[in-house]
Length: 130
Length: 94
View 1: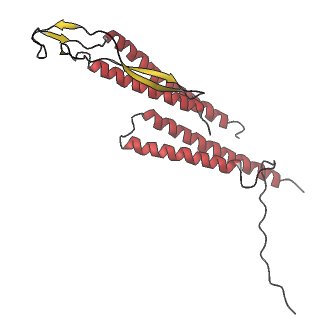
View 2 (view 1 turned 30 degrees about the horizontal axis):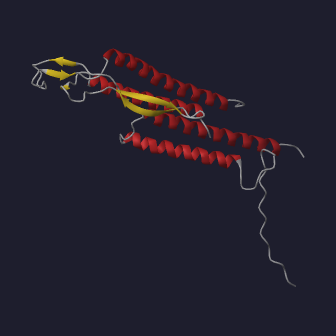
View 3 (view 1 turned 45 degrees about the vertical axis):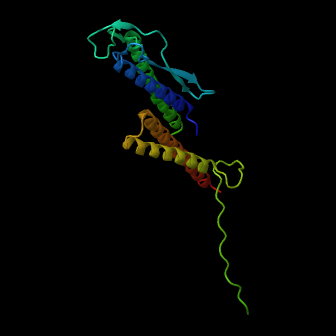
């Protein structure tokens, strides 16, 4: 018994939930400085991959955001090296907040598809019912 | 004079509700029940996982519960149609 619409929307909701997890991790670490010269905290990006047929979507990869980190002068920071430099994390707050809106809407949209598909299938069972 | 022993009465052949010829042993009703049972089992497993807190995707459980209830409703509708068709045929005047 194939309920393809519900399966595909469920996979989309799983992807949206993973994306939300990654975004919340990035936002929580948006001020995690590290000593200068060390690898900074890089934002996590979720790469989606479409599955064949009507299989929905899967998680292709989780990559770290590329880019050169900012090295700022902050001598009062306990993590500062002898020059007073610390490495800022590679997290763009604007981008993360925008992605947060998109991810939460994606989650809600997929759940709405599940709900409507269930109503549609149930309406089919009403045919000929006396 | 020998009296032959009473033999058992043969079983009555069941009426095929759909009327079409089918392979013996295969019926759409049984297939529907099997599929519905599989979906129910999956929904129960996910329910236990959700209750113990192991399930990370809560929508998996609610979607599986929706699919299981749909499958059961479909099987019930199949049964109702079959019974109706059988009763319709039995009502025919000979």
